[in-house]
Each structure stands twice: as C-alpha cells, then as structure tokens.
Image 1 (spheres, rainbow, N blue to C red):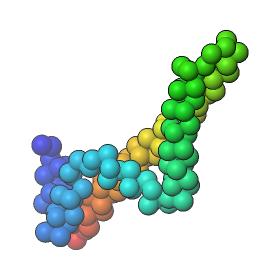
Image 2 (tube, rainbow, N blue to C red):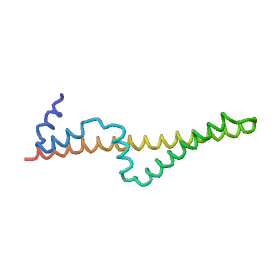
Image 3 (cartoon, one colour):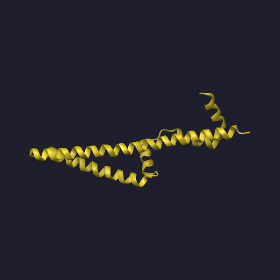
Image 4 (tube, rainbow, N blue to C red):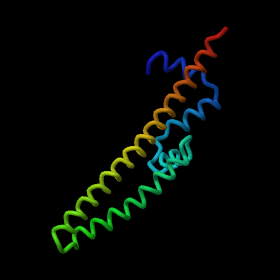
Length: 125
C-alpha cells in the first residue's frame, strides 16, 4: 500500500467504505450486459441485442442452406450470404462488448472520483 491509499482509507466513513466495497467485487458478464441494456443507450442496446438474435438465427439458416445446396451457384450464393451475416454478427458483438467495457471504465473512474473527493474533504481544515 502507498501512503495515498492509506490516507484515502482513513478519510472514508463507514457508509463510504461499504459503497466502495460493493464496487470492488468483479461483476459477471450477465450483470455487465444488463448494465448495457439499462444504461443511457438502453433502447439502442436492446434493438442491437434483438438484431443480434435475429441475425444469429439467420446465420444458422444460411449456413444450413450452404451445406445443403446442390448447385455451385447456390453454394456460392449461400456462402457469401453466410459470410456477410457472420461479419455483421461480429460487428454487433464488438459494439456491444465495447459498450460493456466503456461502462466498466466509467464505473472505475467514478470510484476514483469519489475517493479523491473524500480525500480532499478530509484534508480541509
């Protein structure tokens, strides 16, 4: 521990310690996903999540059609459609996980901001 950590801990009262202790626990993926769905862009996130589910079903269907196609033209068509759906699914997941990462980073910044504010308050005469 550094000196600043000890000073921050000394400045906290019991309510603040309980609040910070609740933030210290690692949050699971389901909790982080629910944060994304309920956050400031919750409506868009729900739309993107629903699109990902529909796209996943379409991806399975297109993959099935690719493997059951009889002509080379059908194989090419369903292969390209499957590849396109797979790429769209990847982009959707990238956006969703980036949003989860952003909210986790903001959560940590708020925790640090609270600790610094409490430290500053404790240092005032």
